[in-house]
Length: 121
Length: 318
Image 1 (spheres, rainbow over the protein chains, first blue to last red):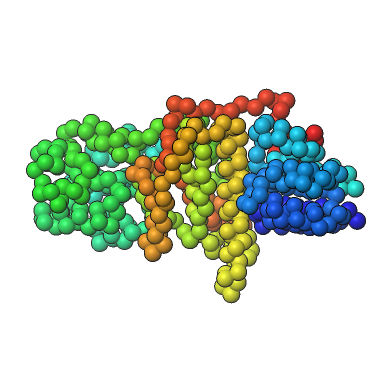
Image 2: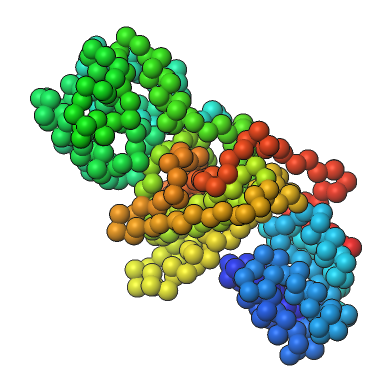
């Protein structure tokens, strides 16, 4: 089964999002920041979708996306930012790095579950 | 609910004659007058009641010596609180011995309440907070709390100004706010046990491990409020401060005291979260401390095009 990686420094968010996705029958892994996320993607080719926060310690979410596309050369994994940020410049930076979508927190799982399933397939 | 800022003042004045005048003054100047019995004065001062100032009288406490001793004791205990003394004959501190004078920030006489108004404006309402900001902070925070605690009823009281530095509860979060019109911090303060209680996770044997759940929750609430604040009031603009000056923050755990290195009053909000079924209550104090820059003339609320707007929680596909 395709795996979803949830990257967030807040354990409250990780638990909430990962818990919801697991309950919906999806296979989920978690990472605590961009650095951890990058390393998990590198080590697990089964990850098909990344749901990532932006503001995190050690490595922010947008830098992680740029490294996934650049350093890892992974252009296939789908990436959605799940963040409190909604500034146009950040979205532009995300789009330029090849992210697929943007969700402004708080996460309302039911509203996005079908899209997430499609992107993780 | 009013957005007019208020501040609490402790009135230490025994004069029956002047009591009505002070009450009227407070009502007309957005002040909430609090009284305390003499034998409870120091314990009240050591607790957190978010004061803006103390209105003192030169007759309070009995003899002149006792009066001076009480003032000095208050000043030693809470030097951040301005003590304004009502004098019988003249609105000056000049004739007081220097050691006693140091306890007070200003004097006034009952016949001239304009002096008191000027002092209050100088020491409490010295920073102008745009109404849109004050209203918006309450709205943002209420929305975040309502999303996080769906089973609880959220209410908030009139925002107020404090000069207190005392920390409420055992756990607080801080996040920097950086823009071209403000630089400072938002601080959230709360108590651990009531949160664990409403989360249904309180048990005396597990507090040692469950406190992390409170930390994480408070961190996420802080993050969500910060994000909304940024989207609404800061946008893409970055701080105009080129040299990015910082000052140390000092926390004294023993005295539950935090200093941001400034005498500036702080903008404070109190939210109450109630579980209507059990009566369990959580209090959350939110303070804004603009200690590094405050330029409200550059404040603006960012309007988003309706077409650009996507509801939070919805997925915007690119």
